[in-house]
Structure formats: structure tokens, C-alpha cells
Length: 314
Figure 1 (cartoon, rainbow, N blue to C red):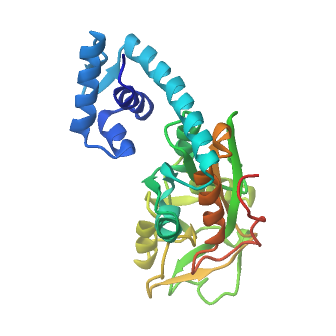
Figure 2 (figure 1 turned 180 degrees about the horizontal axis):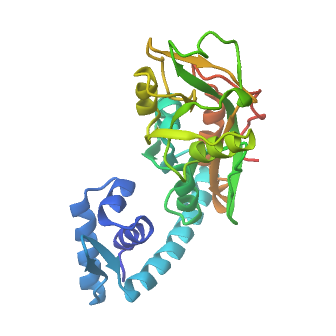
Figure 3 (figure 1 turned 90 degrees about the vertical axis):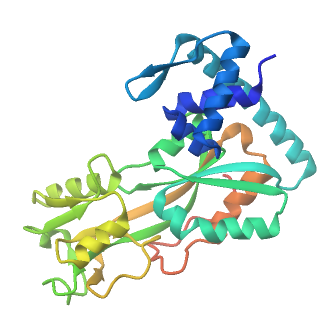
């Protein structure tokens, strides 16, 4: 009989694309994942991974096993949900994927609250890009995702995935303290011509928002620096190298050389919790969502408008 833990390791490599990424998602070492797959190869007498450049690729047989593992994991989840629902208390392991600023600005308080009130619940968080995390939920790799979208780009929810609003936040315009905008009460889109910008790389929602918004206002953005992390963007603004639009969640106190200004119309970022439809009744899911909503907004986060009513999955 095939070992489910070994199938889970192979499925994780299939989803994440490498042994190292699979190990990070599962909370194991790369060596442990490799050992699980080696044992699975012995069990099946089949080569499952092939060297390709510096990485590995799944063989045709491995892809078949990974698909089988996905179905088995879904059955296991359904059984666990039923048992937990009958007990009526959150318990067992719950895996959560959260984007970077939520992992930093929201999740620590949520995780601590859950650990204090529900000692039988073992929540494991991984920091993941929001558009990747939705697919991880859909494929059964993670139980719950904390993701976001902006007003210009709604977050798609695949079939079989539910979502509910956690809250909304305003994004500020950050400028150096000696910038011409620094003394203003508000800055409008039409005022932004000729500015040097710092933002995230193409393909990220922040970058897309900036390009679309300024072009709509008749300006072609001059992007001089790109960085993945908001803390890096803030540091570049503090050095006087440009201006940026940055969400308030997880950014923390701004350095003395940076001024935050309201931008009108204001960019709005919406936070969601997403989970598989089959797990909707699981107490661990409903309790985690309720806790996320009860901790919104975190200290220092500026709301764009009152959050949608909470109370769990809807």
C-alpha cells in the first residue's frame, strides 16, 4: 500500500516546482522531502524525479501519482472536516498562506490569539504571494489563504474555493520629507506628472495599478527603482530617490525622511480569506476567519472604508 505522507511530498513538489519549495511549504527540510520521494520510488519501482538543469522534473508516472495524491488528500480533508465538526471545537493542523505584509502586520496577533484560545489547533503559516496562494488553496496544498486585490484588479476565486472579506485599507503616497508635495494636505492623480517612481516589479498589482492610473491621467510613469518588499521601497524613498504608493499594513513607523500623504482618488486594497468549499463547515476554518476579522484593522492601518460585516465564511 502506498504511503500517504510520501504521496503528499510528491504532490508538494508537483505544486511548488522544486524539492526546496515543497519542503518550505510542508515545514520539512529538503533532505526529508527527498528521502520521502526516494522511498516512494522504491515502493513503486518507478523513477519519479529526473534531473533537469539545476532542478528536477516529474516523470509521467510521477504526475499520475501526484494527481492521485491530490484526490486522496481531498478525501482525507473531507473526513477530517466531518470529525472536527462533530467535536465542535477547532483542532488539528491548519495550514495558512499569507502575503508578506499580512504575514508581518496582521498574522502575528491572529496566530497568538488562536494559540491562546484553542491549544488543540496547530496553525502553520507560510508567506506566499497572494495570486499563488489562491491556486494552492484550490489544489488542496494549503487550507486557508489570506490574499488581497486592488480596486482595479478583482481577485478571482476558482471553482470550489470560497472567499470572504477581512477588511479594506488605504494606500498612501510616500514622498521624501523635502519633496515639493510634502506640505500638501492631499495629492491628486493629475499632479503626478514628471515624478520619479519606486515600485514593485511588473506583474505585481501595485505596479499594474501605478501604470494604469497614471496613464489614465495622461502621464507615462518613470520608474527608476523596483523592489519586492515595501520596507525596501520605503528606504529608497527616505534616501530621496523617488516617490511611491505603499499600503499601510505591515509597513510600520515611517523613518524621519519620509512623509505619507493621502492620494485622491485613494488606492484601495482589499483583504480576503479563501478556503475550499468542502472545508466550509470545519471549525478550524470558521474560527480562524472570525479571528482574522476581529483583528482588523491592526494598529496603524488606515481603513479606506468600514470593513464588510464579519462572522465567518459567507
